[in-house]
Amino acid sequence: MGINTERDIQANLQIGPTDHGMVRLFIEADGVEIPMDFEPEEAEEIADEILAAVQAARIVKD
Image (cartoon, rainbow, N blue to C red; front, top):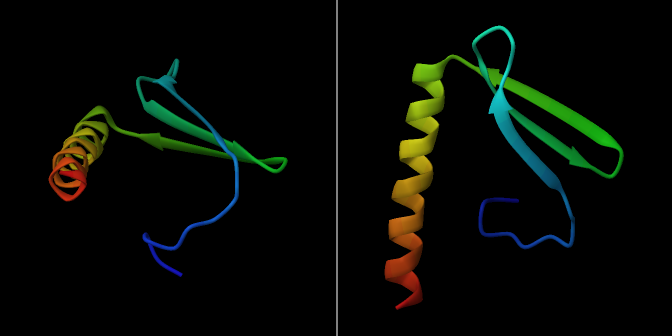
């Protein structure tokens, strides 16, 4: 399995700040909840990676 393997799974993603100054990615799927907390600097790196993936996906799509 890899990033290009399609799956028929629905999930909910929530993103927001915590009361401890962290950024939380909260994923829920099939009754499983995964909270992932990141320092703001780590969250910025993740955001940069997401934006880079968006740009790459647009190139592939065109």
